[in-house]
Image (tube, rainbow, N blue to C red; front, side, top):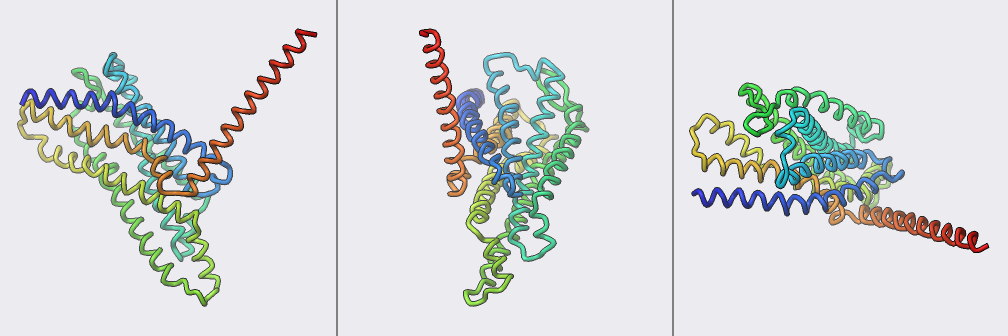
Length: 334
C-alpha cells in the first residue's frame, strides 16, 4: 500500500510537471489567439461572442494564476504557504475568475436559447446592451462574493486553506452548489430548451410560405449562428462531463468527512481531489480554442484573418526597419 501511495504522488508530480506545463503553453497560445479573434470590431457586435470573449479572458487569468505557481512550487518554495497575503490574493483572483467563467458559460447558453426563441420578450435578452450589462453585473457580483472565503483562508501546517471547521463546511456547500450543481444544471436546461426551439423552428419553416415569421426563423438559423451554437454546445457539454467527477467527489467528501480514515486512504482521496479539481478543471481553461477550431468553420476563417493581419504587421515592421537601416547607411556614405 505504501508503494502504491508513493506511486500516486509520483504520478501527480509528473502530471503537474509535464501535463500541466504542456496545456498551459497550448492554452495560453489558444486563449490569446481567441481573444484577438473575438476582439475584431465586427465580432464584438455579437452578444454571444461577447460572452465567449469574457469567458476566454477569465480562462487565461485562471490558467496562469492557478497553474504557473503550482508548477513553480515543484522545485521551489511554495509562496502560498509562506505569505498570508499571497495565499488570500491568489485564491481571490483564481476563484473569482473561475466563477465568472462558469457564469459566462451559462449566459452563452442562455443567449443561444434566446436567439432561437419566437418570443419577443425572450429574444430581447439577445442584445449587445444586455450582454454588456450581464457581463459587468456577474463580474462585480463574484468579485464581492468571494471576499469572505478569501479572508477565511489561513496558513497552517504548510497548507493555504480554510482551517475553521464551520467556514469549511459553508465553503463546501457553497462550492458544491455554485460550481458543481447549478452551472451544469442551467447549461443542460438552456441547451434542452434550445434543442426544442430548433425542432419547432424547422417544423414551422415551409417552402411555400414566405411570410415575416419564416424570414425571421431563417435569419435565426443562418450559418454564423449555427456555428456559434455548435461551439457553445460542444464546449459546455465537455465542461459538464469533466466537472461531474468533482461534484461526485464533493458529495462523497461531505458524507465521509466524519469517518476515521487511514493515511493511505487520505492520500488516495488527495490524489482523486487533484485529478478532479485541479487537473481536469484547469484543462477546461485551455481547451476552448481547440474546440472552436474543430467545430466552427467561421471561427477558423476569422483566425486566419487575424494571423494574416499579424503576419502583415510583422512584415511591415521589418520592411520599415530595413528602409531605415538603408537610409542611415546612405547618409553615412554621403
